[in-house]
Image (cartoon, rainbow, N blue to C red; front, side):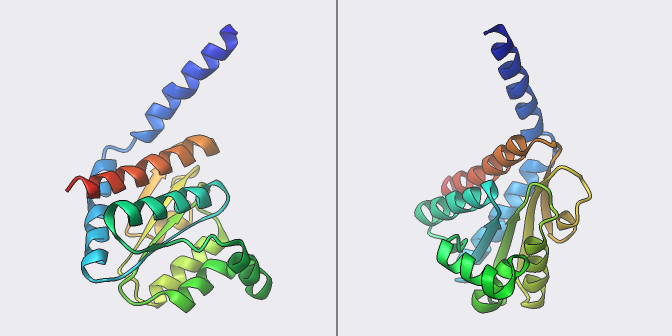
Length: 184
């Protein structure tokens, strides 16, 4: 029982450090708020993608942003669409194909990837750039100079190699953005 308390105290102390490690995090969230309000003003869309647990974060963000702030957000996490695109175009192309079919000049792309190395995210960023998206935002972890972190105008990098710390931090960042916009 004592080992459990020691583990949990250490776990939460580390999580507190990684969530607010970058002194510029608040500045970046405020800038992302401006991007989202610009998207709303111009009647454009936000696309947000993640794999695995990051897909759940994207789905949660999508629902809360629509309900709380009336901003158009799409994550395309429907199993039928994803498996069709994976089968027809390859898993590494699922998000870029979605952007090809549904994205338009002036849209915003948010990519959530713990490793920052997911090929489908890298290809989505390239496709968004080709389609003249307004901005690309990345949320990554693990290695600081991962390939995805170099693709966005804003990158939220979490200095941890633990998936749950990285994903929990990404969730806090995105949900704080929703509350910040709602609080206007």
